[in-house]
Length: 292
Image 1 (tube, rainbow, N blue to C red):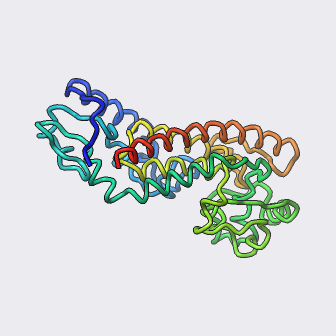
Image 2: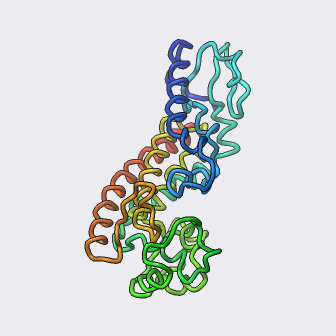
Image 3: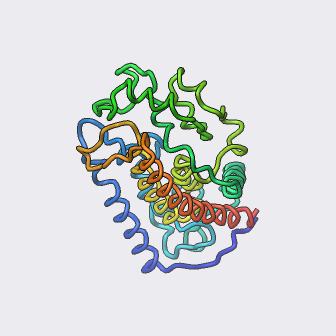
């Protein structure tokens, strides 16, 4: 396999791009890195849940088919899946696909299936409620923040609702008493068949699938997916049972008809944006696989 070179960037071009990306990420992670004490349930969540470090997100990758002139003597020449060619550095697409080809194909299949499936807008964010259903204080995930309706009121909302969560990585955090209340039983091996485009967690996961493809995709794509995921997480927690007003998050009271209508309206907006992000990631996968 021979890497198809679409662009050659002079050092005077790629160094500013790399610096601008690093500065962008620095702004995004400043609060997380400076924070001490209890964890922030919105801004810290992506780092805890996805385990992709700020330093990894900060590292700039141009993606396949881009050759960086005069980079052979720089640290990036030693980065995994890169190679030096005539004093320049580029992604070694053959080595990358040999190691990561199955991941690229899985991501493409999953996001394509999700994109083509109709969205379900009747979940109302109840997954977060199911994660604390009949839980003891020690079992509640976001310690230090009270439940808006208290334990009994929270349990009553779950019991009076139809829980229909299709996302395995949300469902697996349900409390044992909450699991039988879910109309679905998502599993890891049914992920491709079950994920749907209105799911907030599936939208956040676009970030996960983007960074799992690094350095085979441009870092701009990964950073864009991170910002989308952080916005989605804010809606996720505003609709959650926790009282986060001290952090500046006004609750979306999904226990009321008005709150459910507000949630569904915002969910539709994020579903559209997540679909656009899926299309970009699928296109990046196709670009890689075309070279196979």
